Length: 165
Image 1 (tube, one colour):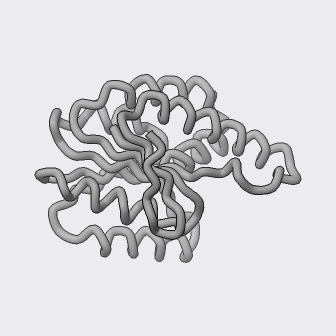
Image 2: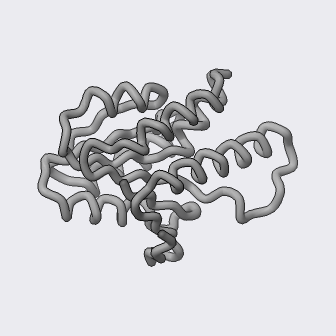
């Protein structure tokens, strides 16, 4: 399992797609985004267009564990992204800490080449509200759990991958 982590617009998704397509397909893209507005619908459309042919998209804004369990073994999988998945659980007022532990456990046992995208959110300023601080802290803990289980961790900076692990 490879974790590709970085800030906004750092090139995480595009690099993860390149890594995944270096594996023999078919490829599965598990999307966690939800299109609540036109701007997000446009982002999702751009991601889909960039991937091109050969990809199967599975929408899993909440049940990421179930989506992974339903896939056949040995299939390259790209999960994009953990921080949107976490946001969805927090906004739904789920037990996101338990969900995160469960997901990290499943990710520690990949059944093929899995590529996981997540945002690094802890390098900025301390957020000014409690919800944003809870999110930043929860994302940091989730990223640590997934990074510990990953075989490879890449930090994306300005479109460049830096190998961390």
